[in-house]
Length: 457
Image 1 (tube, one colour):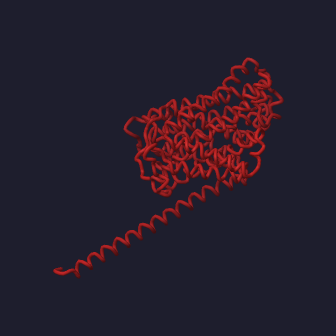
Image 2: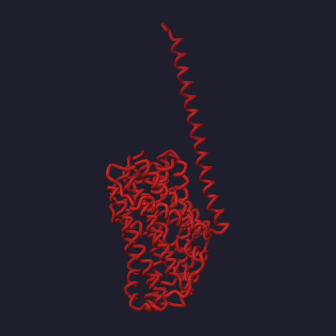
Image 3: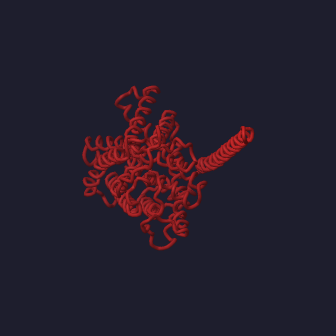
């Protein structure tokens, strides 16, 4: 099957905002209010405030970078354009493997585990593996059939998973006991940093929405508008849900480490409310998986298109105009990791991988400005000169300093492995180029010799 050409620019700011919200709002928000409350106590609101400010700063930088660089790949394209292919390749690996593939595998395992409570056979190794493989095969098939088809499914699932959360907000806000919200102590910097690092797991993921930059209409307008709409939706929803969970459950919130939002819904609306929120968890996970199968393969496609990964990954389906090989390969990697099942330590690895990429994108904004990189339309420019990119990068680095030694070693290993892989690919390409040149030279020499021996020469 041959390459069908370029990707189609068919996505607008509303779709990008929903892709961002879907990529960010996953299973984490259903569990993290209780876990963060156990870490930060009554100062949980402070942790949310720091995360909200950090996310706004980060995605202002993504908005400017995306309005200047219009290629597919998101952070890979931004960092690669600013600092060269070596940095871009490392950023791509941190996004698609360090975060997306491992997080998808973990989420799929949670989803099948939840279904196993109703279908016990799914707890057995072989049925579990079949279910996981079928799940990723289904989501891959939907996204191969076209970016519009995949985006429509993601938009529909995103709206469906947001409805129970919005309903919980509407029902819960009038019942908030505001005395539960008032902080009684301020944690030290180390505790606060640990809480923010944990909480950022719920806020990350929206970065992948820009992997489809090559399929956005008018990127200079769509990227900043869509991102700002998505950030406003996520920050407003998260802060509201935390207020409801903390205001309704009070001192019981830290003890609800599995599903505090379901506990709050049960207290407000009875058993059906708890069931509704538990169903929303499964729907949210499936929506996340489907959305990431739409977006993350574009990182592989973009890297292959630039010659940094095997060429077949850059193939575009001649009928559906989607990077079908990249989608299939990415789905297979996710399914393999899910079947193997060793995911728990990868939650922090995923968060720290994205935070490191965020640092690179924030600094890339300064480099893209300096070099005057932009498309045909004027780019979005963050007010305040270098203030926002520098501040965002600084806060991300502060959060990363709260990694444990083992977590830092895991992140460093992924970075060094990516660098080594890049150098190996360069050597392989240089060797292939030398062989091709040698064959061409030998062919030219043979042709000249044949011409000299020919009659009448």
